[in-house]
Image (tube, rainbow over all chains, first blue to last red; front, side, top):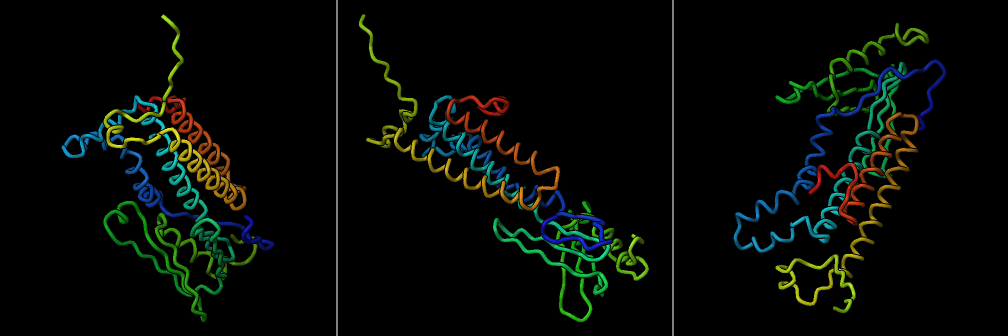
Length: 179
Length: 93
């Protein structure tokens, strides 16, 4: 992990990313755009003024195939970029700290750490039908003294993560080799 | 019967659209669109691969993800240029 070096005796307890459902939801626009060239010829039939454009979607012609191929390359590249950003965003819990790695966009990366002894309060929030069914929620970690607040949004099973954080926050578990 | 030179116009518009766009040279536009898409794809892919290798080089996902992107892109480019997309042929018209 290049963003931060682990201290002697420090080890990674858990790495979490956003829930896969949120990732798939983010891919939905790409899926719609990818199916558009296949749906349009069928839709155009129902709009007589636009029906004359239907021959353009005859994918037996080289020009239509070229257009479809290029369109799908662009969509695929965008979707792959979305996966890249999803994968590079994560939260890392070690036995000494919590680190958040936010890849907002390419060349826009933020890494921040919060030492576990400074954690004062850990709150989870699961709201909505789908998040409740799939176990998707947020965790808010507040530090003592300073106004530092870490929020992990859309992570799977936030209650388990909260318990894990609290386990390592408790003084007995912070001694090296006690993890 | 004398031999006639082959008149290939692979990127000619469908007759319905040709009548709408008289004097439109599809071939010239296609070449520039190909350049633009290729340039975009190359820059975007290089940037994404840079991020994968720099920030996720220790993950086992990095190389399969890069490989899958290159493979699918190659198949789609092949479809765009020749009409055949290798393993994607079954999904495309």
